[in-house]
Length: 327
Image (cartoon, rainbow, N blue to C red):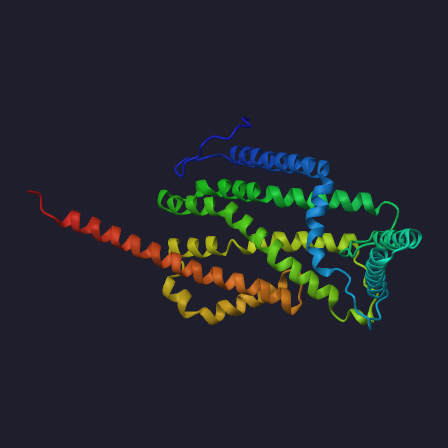
């Protein structure tokens, strides 16, 4: 059996063994891509962890004077200590500038230096960081994040291989519709991941971590946070494939653009259900998911209508040219 991929046409008739051979080759490509991405992500694990922890910058401990959270009270105390030390250093600098006696000036300058050293020794405010429980969790969490990130990076190629495997089943006309849609898949997936990383994930983490935080000592476990973050990004990348699905069913003729426009209320319901099923069932996350999904739905209808008009004009021109008598 040959393990190399060859172009397969719609009219070709392959045996079951040949289909399985092609499937095996495409699976090998997918697994190889994942392994390569996994090795790179594991090699650059510090960078990967820094990137995925960055949305936690929006959940820095707040200086709440009346907060019951011990971490926020500690942050407020440290901020007050730093402010007091810097204020005292400025006061002693002013006294040293006004002092006429050299010994007094030296004493004030020494005190100002000590207060500045104290201010620098106070730890600065930092965003919350995931905590690990158990001896081996730092290692297992790092490997798990590298695997999640590798799957996220390799997913566009995996989706492309899946589409390429079923593409020979399409006729020539159907293939003319499917090929442009396949090209859209990786770009839409990357757009969904970027949108989820910069818009959905920070808002979701900020809302969930600060919700009713006066009643809890909030510790964010690394395993749960990384699973939530990567799952959300993958879900956003897949959800951004809505235009591909809508263009496919309209171009094939399963559903018309007029039907999609008429059933907008059902589309809103479906979008709401999808947003509820995706990671993060809080109102902020659901709204952040619903808005882009519905915008993609409306944009897909607009693009499908433009393609229909273009196809209608092309058919009209061909009809006119076929009806013109020969000179």
